[in-house]
Image (cartoon, rainbow, N blue to C red):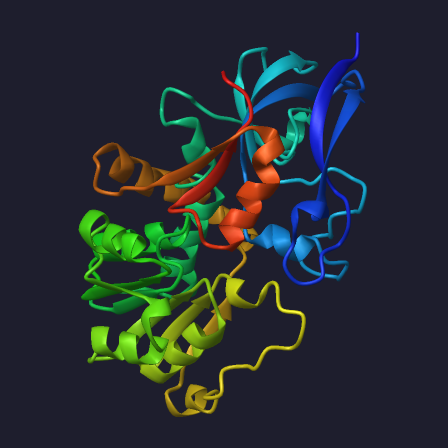
Length: 337
């Protein structure tokens, strides 16, 4: 008997900000798994900023979503049916076919995870793609070294919260974060141990950053772009390094946005500015887990999740993430285990 599933599809390509009409919920009958495939009942799924770019029909580092087809993204689920020896019904796995209740997945694209080692959401956040992004971006792309002054934008998000704490744990002289509310600023300084933080809505980013870092900064981890990147360039010390992970401030722009107006400082300060895609750093995965998992277990590295209940609410979770309504990783709970 065919398995029934719900899935969220891209109904139309957004122009500017996505809306509820960008998405549609559909009911489908899944095909029986072929040899080498699994049927997985999804428990949690991730919504991430990069998904906004995939809604545009443009060539990029990952193919665009197709109108009328189910969206994709990280998910953790429970194996229901298996055609391969390595996976048994009841196994919990990580895979890339989120945005649906149940998925037929190629076993070669699935990774078994241990639900007793960490909460399931952690495999989509602090121990998953966002965590590895933070680790690789700080240590390999930004070439962090002890004694650096580090500035993180979007610091209360899934990646930013980890970047700041890792920098502190590895010997940063000072860690500064920006966020979009007083509550998030308090979370950064009172719970995560950032030395300073500010609400970018309270005034010009440059003024607030330079007040927090009168000695300048050595590393900027960029999740926002725009005004934040311009302020960081102005504040970076000679030979400063920038890891550009995201530019969420311009993802929904309908017209070209002005570049930072102080780019000549890249020359004067001999700055290094590098883009960051986590897929380039898979060689670090084992090192990352070995380094970070004990920090989580000991409570030295803390993290938050914002969980929205129900697959039907996944579009609103995604839109809320773009609006900055989440603290830490934004997740959607699809099914009970």
